[in-house]
Amino acid sequence: MARQQKSYFSNDKLVKTIEQFRTALGAPSMSNFFRVQMDLANVGPEPVDAFPVTLDSASSGVYQKEKVANDLSRWLTSCGLLADGQKETYEILCNEAMLPGVSMSVVQEVGSRQGIRERFATQRQYTDISLTFFVSQDYKSLKLFQEWINFMNPLYVTQEGVRHNQGYPGGYPNNDERFAYHRFRYPHDYKRDLSITKFERNLGADGNNEEFRPDAISYNFINAFPISIQDIPLNYAGGNLLQVTVEFAYDRYYIVNNKGTAAPAVPQKGLSQVVNAENVSENTVDKASN
Image 1 (cartoon, one colour):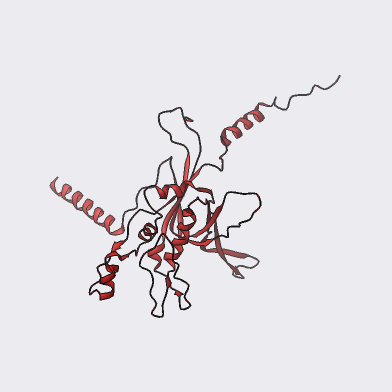
Image 2 (cartoon, one colour):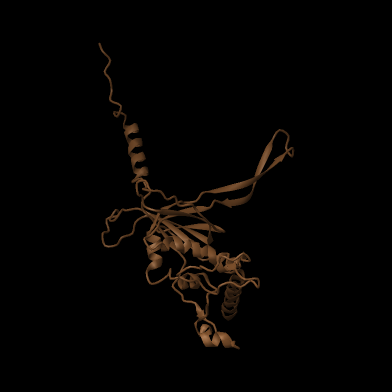
């Protein structure tokens, strides 16, 4: 008598395990739903009251037009790069982003325990991130990061070492003299926060079609600044969309989810001591009155 073959899925325990796996997997996350945000604003440069005014500058009216942009947003605005809605345009033009990893530096201890090699974490290392943007027809998405670096590391011209007080939409055609050199600004002036939000297209997944609340995770980068603008190849072969890749360094990042209970704000040590002292005094008064 031939042995009856059982189906692979006749095992109820196996079928239950497959269903649990499918439930745990859910809908796989897709790589083409994300948004980049940059902490920039449309703020114009401040006018400068230069007194006393020399005769040459007064006759030409230069002192009435001179302005200073000692802030990154003011500099980019003076370059004509942060008009109304332009910041959002740059963020939309970002077509590729990288969610960063993290690594630990370790130190090795040998010989403290016989036959054991111990390793200890010493420093948390954050990897740089790279963002790729489509280059717009007016090249402003490219010029945005060029001017960001110009603000970080301005050029000083003439033998006296004079730099421009603001940016200019037409560029700097007179920066070709031999005595020019660079100096850096303070890090506080050119560092800005960035965020990359990864979300999913699951409208109505929880049965509520009134509000669009997709699953999302945000990487928030503290004190970011561009450190590299990659080369852009040009050729007379088949035309392609121009893209520019910019690498950013930052101090650290933290992650925020749009669902679940978020961590409460941590009170300052001195404030918590005052609150505790007030509670103790109130409890003492209540006991004394009773």
